[in-house]
Length: 260
Image (cartoon, rainbow, N blue to C red):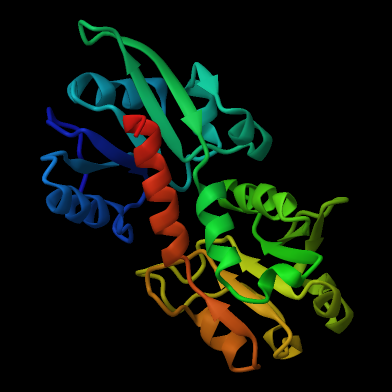
């Protein structure tokens, strides 16, 4: 649902499409539980421009901040007044705090990346995954960049995997062989492949080369078990979805918005 009319929303989500997102339900239930009366709305934008962004901010005078999801985690940076150093390093923002004067006038937009926090906590709980010294990240978008920063903080060297782009930090799916997976035991799917409603999709990964020594973390959380996970598990790999990361980044976002 597109949300562009006057609203009492306190927080929200910007992206396109948003039919797969659990964020609104998650925050709505959280605010019901804490009795705060706060609200969270989806702002589905087919195009992110200064006009569409500031229209949302102007039509939602109580809006204190919003999350950003695909495909705008990188593009949103051009519209911000300040970016946290960690988000700057990642080159992607998924959380924006709105700064207003006492009279309600907009005075600034600050960008952060709580995906890094969410992924860090999630991968720590995937027992054995962080023993890998190298990792493959499927995808090169905003989520992939956040994962790379998080892995580097754990002393794990990431290599991106792309369908077409190849450089010193990126290889092609066709470059992956058994030796690659012996050295890179952790594989993270940071692409949207397999996300509802496109549940029959999956990354073009050589699943047959996986063994029980590999760990496959999918950032997709809807559905809870993706084809990427099923195919990996069929060859003995340990698998995990993106729900823990979703919850972790959401709580970190709320702390930024409320300073609590």
